[in-house]
Every structure is written in C-alpha cells, then in structure tokens.
Amino acid sequence: MPNLKSLAKDTAIYGLSSIVARFVNYLLVPIQTMRFTADGGEYGVITNVYAYTALLIIVLTYGMETTFFRFMNKDGESRDKVYSTTLRMVGFTSLLFCILVVLFRQPLADIMGYGDHPEYVWVLFVTVGIDAFSCILFDYLRCIHRPIKFAVLKIAAIVLNILLNILYLIVMPELHLNPFGIYDSAFHLDVAWVFYINMFCTISTTLLLWRECKGITNGFDKLLCKRMLAYSMPIFVMGIAGQLNQCLSQILFPYLYDGTPREASTQLGIYGACIKVAMIMVMITQAFRFAYEPFVFGKSRDSDNKETYAKVMKFYIIFTLLAFLAVVGYIDVLRYVVGKSYWDGLRVVPIVMAAEIMFGVFFNLSFWYKLTDRTIWGAWFSGLGCIVLIAVNVLFVPVYGYMACAWAGFAAYGISMVVSYFAGQKYYPVPYPLRDIAFYVVVAIVLFVAIEFSNATMPLWGAISVNTLLLAVFAGIIIRRDMPLSALPIVGRYFHR
Image (cartoon, rainbow, N blue to C red):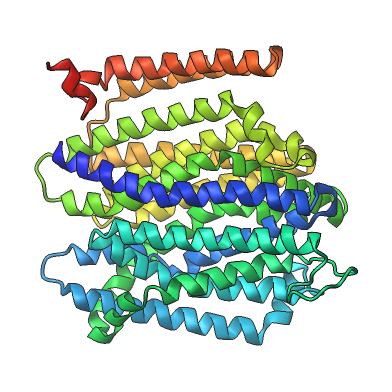
C-alpha cells in the first residue's frame, strides 16, 4: 500500500500539470475556433500540422525516454553517465534535425501542401526539435522524483501560452494592432502566429531547465550508447506505430477525403476541434504514464510486484470509466468548449474516449515486455494496430469522413490491447482481476446507454440532473465494492471514532 500511495501522490502532482495543460487546450480551442471559423479551414491547418509534430517527437526521442528509465534503474550503471550520454545523443540528433529543417524548409512545405507558407512547417518543426531535447530534462526530474518542479515548469509554459494566445488572437485584433503593436486596420491575422507562440513558450521552458542541462558535462560512453540504442530501437518502432495510431488519421485525411482541399480542411478542423473535448481521457492517461513508468521499473525487484500491477490496472479502468461517463453526461455543457460551427463533430467524442481507455490499458500491459527486455513485441503489437488503422481509414474515410477516423483509432487500440494481453499472460503472467474489470465495463455500458437516451430525449437541465444521478450510482458502486469510505485517508477517521 505505501507504494500505491506514492504512485497516487506522484500521479496527482503530474496530473496537475497535465490537467492544467489540457484545460488550457480547452481554453485555446474556443479562442482559436472562434477566431478561425470552420468554413475558413484554418483550424484544419492547425490540426494537420500538429499531427506531424506529434509523430516527429517520437522520431526525435527514438525510444530514449523509456530506455533512460530502464538504465537509470539498472544495477551497475552510473546514473550520471546514463543521463549525460542520453542528453548528448538526443541533443545531437535534435540539433541536426533543426538545421536540416531550416535548410530544406521550402521543399518540406511543398510536400506537405503548404508551399505558400513554409513558416507553418519550419517554425513548428524546429519547436519539436527543441522539445525533444527538453523531454530528457523533464524525464530526469521524474527519475529523481521532483514532481513539483516538473509541474511548476509545465504550468508556467502553459500559462504563458494561453496569455499570448489571448493577446494575439483576441486583444490585438480587436484593437486593430498588428503583431508588433502598430495600428493597422487592414491587418489580417495569419494562423502562423499560433505556431510562433508555441515556439516561444518551448524555448522559454527549456531555458528554465538550465540546471538540469549541466548533467551533459558528465561525459559520453560509446558502449553504453550502443546498449541503450539496442534496447531503444524496438521501443522506437513501437512508439512510431503507437503515435501513428493517434495522429495518422489527421495526416492522411486530406489525401483520402472525397472532396476539395478546402472541404477536407474544414472537415478535419471539425474533427480536430471536437476530439479536444475527449482530451480528459488523454490527460488521465498521460498523468498515469508519467508516474507509472518510473514506478514500475523501481518496483520490478519487489516480491509483490505482479499483484500491485494487477491492482493498478483495475483502478485505472475504474476511474477512466468514471471520467468517460462524466464527459458524456455533461457533453451538452462541454460542447461550448468549441465554436458552434464545430458542434456537428461532437458525436466522435465517446468513440475517441473509449479508444483512449484502451490505449491506457495497452500501456499498462506493455511493461511485461519492457521488464523482460522483449521490447520487440511492443513493436509488433503497435504495428498491427497501425495496419488496422490505415486499413479502416483508407476504406471508410472516402465514405464516412471523419467518423471513420474515430472508429479507426478505436479498432487499432482494441487490437493492440487484446494481443498484448494474451502474449503477456504467456511470458509474464499477471493476475489481473478480469471478473471485477468486466463487471465495471458492463455497468459503464448500461449507464452510457441511459445517459445517451437522456441527452437525446430531455431538455438540458433535465438531462444533466438525470446524468448526475447516474454518475452517482457508478461512484456509489465503486465505493461499496472497492473503496469503502472507512478505508480512505482523512474521511476514514470519522468511521473509526
């Protein structure tokens, strides 16, 4: 239990920064979707370009984040040497990438369809290069258990981002000022400024990690580098395949959609805006991942490690199902996160959230091959999911548009999750409480159907009242079966008087 309490504490702290990050995304979405309407297609540009950057961050870290944690916790390894070697490896490749992007910015923009706006490409790609290096710096904070500093720096960058978006997308256009503060009644704000703001915030955050950068002075170990690369390559392939499952739909959509480029950009913008409403599940999964990865490697030597992993899986599923029901239950309120012209796409939210739950389960299952150094299995599982995603997109996007993107992710994560479970039970069996998990899934499905019915047939406040009652039922079941109030900290004191 002390280990689980430590995990819960770190998850809460990491989750704070993740929650704030996603909340800021909620704030950015109404700002950007009101400034750039669906018909204009600008938000489709943002969605498409950011999809490339999500893939590039995986390429530029090439599995070194997980590898870093593995080697920092290996017997006989010098932690200072592991940290310095990792920084130098990722730092060198990131710098080389940034130089190449600046030199070949026009050909890259032409290939991506933004030949008239190469700044869309090079600004955000250079930002990703800087971000890849800072990922290792943040991983070091996680490894030495500095969640407070981690959260403070993340939140600082986020607050700066939202303030600059408000200034440049709302205040200055209303005052008819150009980006340099000079009055210009004819000035038209270009979407590129969203990317410039992102770059400025990333650079600022990296500079605030200058103390952690000093670790690069501890030398470079060639043999260690080779061993780390051998471990990381399968993880890199797995990461590429896994990230493709998240962003490939947004990359492929303009090429597969049966319509004009403008229509494709409009539809992609609607999809990209509406999946932001489902980001609460990404937020929970990300917070869990930040805390769980160092926790698992640190606990791998304990005798009760498998029982702990099983409990964590159960509670992860329970609370993500609760979050799923909460978002669906209050979707008529949450829809105001996006501009009204985007509301038609909200039907993708439950599908995307369910897919994200399965991705979290897949991540939880992934430690069997990481702990047994069989990382190639992860590449096979993610690759299989990627093949499914591509097939669904190619076959159904021309017919069903962005709805096919949502179902493609659902199918891809579902396949990866199932095959990983069965393989894991053969090579690293963990006694997952499948009966309990199945019970909660069935209850959640029944409540979801009831919530959807109330949303479709009742006025706003009536639906919210009924849905709140249904959520209370689910929470009550959790408390009765697995989290009795008498066992909770602080609250439990009143039951023992």
